[in-house]
Length: 257
Ligand SMILES: Nc1ncnc2c1ncn2[C@@H]1O[C@H](COP(=O)(O)OP(=O)(O)OP(=O)(O)O)[C@@H](O)[C@H]1O
Ligand SMILES: [Mg+2]
Image (cartoon, rainbow, N blue to C red):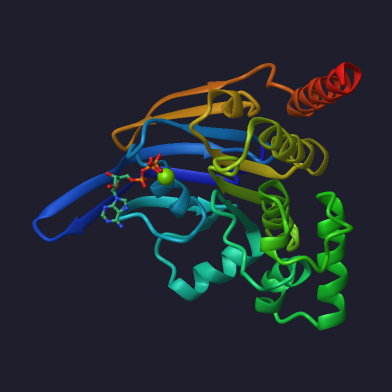
């Protein structure tokens, strides 16, 4: 069997603020294999983002072990973790986190700037990533000239431009309507199936979690259940269905006029 891409062993996170200590994560052990699509669910405050920040090397556990692609990360410096992050992980957040007044192309190029790549090569890679998410005709639009779903696509292109083996997404569809959300999920399912990218995604929505092949339920900083799904929901089919429904609504309005 291959080595897990993500492995937490008895890892925890305590936040100390003044006299109070919050046990945001308590002795969590979990292994995620390359190619899995994992949904992390659970009530607000249950430790989902805390765990994602550790998995994404944005933060480190207070105790326990974190191995990313076999590399122990918990004791590394901020700089060393930043390098690992840039090499191995793509991030997608609910709020998109795009730079305003900056074109789609420049937003997607940014992780390559940090890599010190030449401008012409950066540009070519960013174009390709935007084309892959269906935004080949929006290179020079700034975020305020794009719809929510398009902004999220730019964010996904930015996450993928470095060709990372792991995509970490915290509520990637949290700000989107059902159909746009299905379109984004269809894109994630394609990336997972066709490019073998491992995805770990936090969500509140059962319909969104149903698109993953494994669901981890958290409560009070612990993993309460961990289940594999034999037949994940097909987001592309659902998105096509709501497109057809919207089209027939327009047709019947036209017919009635
Ligand atoms: N920087 C921090 N300092 C102190 N406490 C924190 C900090 N970040 C998170 N917490 C606490 O840790 C617990 C877990 O927070 P976390 O953000 O992981 O929850 P979550 O499951 O992502 O919730 P949500 O669904 O609302 O995003 C919460 O009780 C929160 O108040
Ligand atoms: Mg959260």
